[in-house]
Image: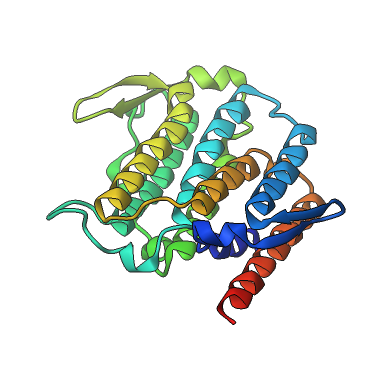
Length: 264
C-alpha cells in the first residue's frame, strides 16, 4: 500500500472502530486510536531531523506544501459518491472545486515563470494563448486519483520555482483578486500558492458539511498525518519515506483485520 492508499483505508474507520485492540510496535497493548498517534509521532520524528528549506522561495513554497497536506488529507476522506454532488443549485461540486484548484496551481506556476523570464518590453501578465490548457486527466477518477494529481502538480511547481534566486523575488508581475489586476512581484505570487490551497480546502470542507458529511476522529487524524508528511516529504530520504509508508500500511492492515473480527 502507498501512503495515500493507506490513509484512504484508515479514513473509513468509524469512531467505534478505534476502540479495537492494537499493539504499539515494540511497546505494548493499545487500541486503534493510539495507532493514529503512533503514526503521527513517527512522522513528527522524521520531520524534526529533515533538512530545512535553504532559501526564501523554498521556505514560501514549503508553506504551500503544508496547505496541500491539509487538503490532501481532506480529499482522502471524501466518499466517491459525493464528488459530483452540488451542495446547492449552481454551486460547485468537490470535483469542480478541484478542477479549479489544480488549474490555478498550473496557471500560477506559468505566470510566475513568465514573470521571471519576461523581457522588459513584454506585458506584465502572461498572454492568454500561452497559459496552460485544462487537463481533464487532473480530475478524472475517484478522490484518491484527484489527490494524487494535485500532488503531481504541486511537485511540478516546487521543482520549477523552489530555487528562485532572492534577487528575482522582486521582479514585477500582475494579479487580480477579483477583476481589475494590480501590480505585484514574484514574492507575492509565490505566497499565492499556499493561500489559494487554503481557500479551496475551506470550500471543500463547507461542501462536505452541506452534503451532510461530518468528519470522524479517524478522518481528523489522517489530515494531521498528511500535514506532517507534507512538511518533510520533499526533504526526507526515500528510505525514511518507505519505512513510514510500511508502518502506516501495517496499521491499515490491522484496522481491516479488526473490522473483520468485529463482524465475525
